[in-house]
Image (tube, rainbow, N blue to C red; front, side):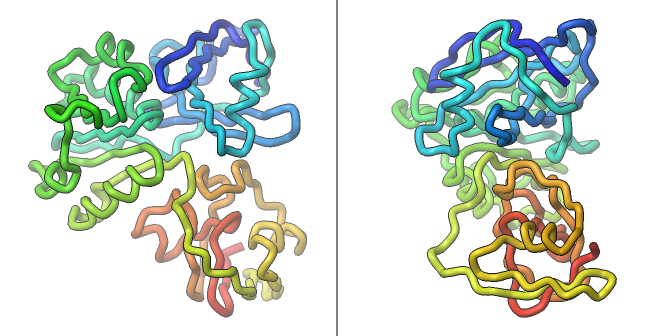
Length: 309
């Protein structure tokens, strides 16, 4: 869709909030909390941004973009080049981070700009009258984006704020997640260190109760990549050199495999594998999914990997 930038405003933490509308149509495609859209940049790159507006207001989409000086250029372009009235090519919403139906309480954890998908979830749960707690972590109140929107959307009774520079608000993540209240479901999003801490603290939670979305791939070790071999369903053998991604090799073999971020965070290129030992380097798949699913834009393998392609 070619959407028009209806308004822009800045939030703490070097975050820019952008509202997008259709030039002619009064309503945009519906979406569920946790959804994101792909924004296509002029240089051909594609970036994913969570929809943090109200899913019941389909007159607009709202995204919030944090400037990342060490990023890949997408956030800098949005901050420096996008102005009101500009036209942006935007995909229909997709959702790799949906709220699951459950009878128990919901625990939402957000770190910094990770509040964007969590905000939409909290708004939906509040409207539905379902029990939940939102724990929002930031370095300081002055750097926490969307605080005012949070207060207006869900009130204070379910919101817990934790700031590094306010000792009285700090929360030990391991202590918070040491026991699972009732039949609780956990959802979390934030920067890599925050994600890693919650993953460690929630390892003892049952399978299927922990859900996450990452904006950046996990930090990898410095081990040089090794070549490996992919075998397709029809028997085609696809060598993957050490300096090439599995996605690139698969495409060169004539398989049209869609991809978006090519950074291991969006899941667009996800496929199945039938045999082999993958080396998962994505930030998408759950522990259960890693037994049979594969993200070829970043993940690799040892020896031979047979894909369901």
